[in-house]
Length: 354
Ligand code: CP3
View 1: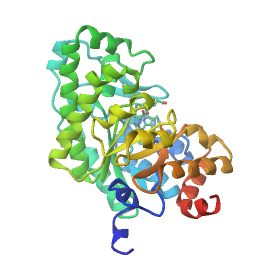
View 2: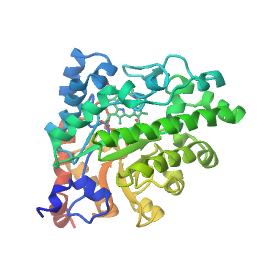
View 3: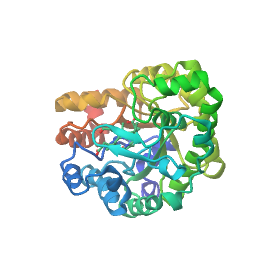
């Protein structure tokens, strides 16, 4: 065990090793459901301060690590964080999410964009990721993350979150060349950003294409898939060893097509049964996720049963236990603690509850 224990569990799962139990972490495991986070938010009311002042971002990233010892520690940041470095001004509004200063609507705006230079525009990323690696050592895996081109374009073009994606779909279907030009530029900068996060210490990187599930399959193949693929290909040219995870919200209708982007791991949500996801993706695709974040409102025995059900269906190989999306902000903190504790005892519990 001594040799293999040098490599943290999540990284071993991402490399396809068979394990005694799947590693466990949560999306949005740092955030509003934690009292420690709400307390710190009073001192640093702006999201950009919390995520861009290195000491504060490190502290927030480590709050769940100290409380629950998850197998993955994710950088506290946001998918829109790199946009100002490309020339797209933004802020993250309390309770609303990203707000873009001048939404991208014209070719002149796309022409004026800059290629991301992470050490110049995001100097805090290097400090934060290095500090996280120093702190968790090989007891946990440090995850980086980025938004995918389609989802970042959706924010940049709409100007904010949307229910209908009317503005970007209007652009997609009336001025496709303009949108493709923008998506290509985003892909190249995102690939640079992923490589940078890996150079700074990220051991696994997750790409969020949160809003790609809003596209029909044929439009997914036109506007989302090629650019996901472009990012992954560019990253693999220089960093072939780093596992890359792909997440789409509401992805049940897209699973086979997600595989065409060639991620190492697919994060599935609760709109698909894990056994079906396994069958549809095939034995060679690693999986993560699947539990409805709402499960954490349930009783301890309910939470335990759902964890065991997911593990039975996904197995102990090529499986990272996670929610299908971020933990909800009014989730009882004690249920999050129970989730991690139970997940770590999964091998014994599965034997008892067989
Ligand atoms: O998982 C983690 O712990 C890392 C933190 C993280 C944040 N945003 C912090 C955050 C991650 C991985 C993200 C990614 C992100 N940001 C996505 C992709 C994941 C997804 O949700 O599909 C998206 C779409 C965004 C854009 C965004 N930023 C939204 C929709 C919001 C929430 C608005 C709200 O208030 O409900 C934000 C703000 C944000 N980013 C918060 C957090 C913890 C909430 C504000 C806060 O806690 O102060």
